[in-house]
Length: 131
Image (cartoon, rainbow, N blue to C red; front, top):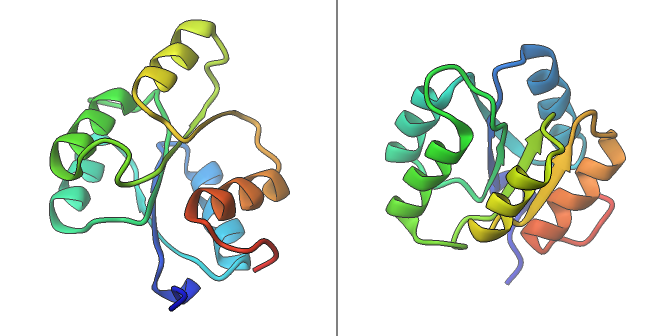
C-alpha cells in the first residue's frame, strides 16, 4: 500500500521567512504538507506533539542550534527513523562531517534550486519523482 502524498508532513525548521515560504511552496508543488518552525524552540514543541515524515533543518537558528534540534528529534524517535535534510549556508567541512556523524540524509548548501529540493525530498521519502 502506497502512502498518499497529502498525508505526508514535512517539518521546515528555518528562521529566514522568505526561504521557508519558498520551501513550503516547493513542497506544495509536489503534493506535500509542511509545518514551518521559525526557531529551535518552536521545532522542539512541534516534535513533542507530532512525528513528521521528514525534517528540513537549518543549522543557524536563534536560540538552540539545528544540531540541538536534531539531538532532540533523535532522542524522541531514534536515529534515522525520520530523515533529515540539512539546509544550510554553512559549506564548511566541519558541519558536513557532523552531518555525516549524525546520520543526516543529505546536507544541502543554500541557495537551493527548487527542482533539486523536490528531487532530494522525494528520494528521502522514497517517493516516485514528479509529484
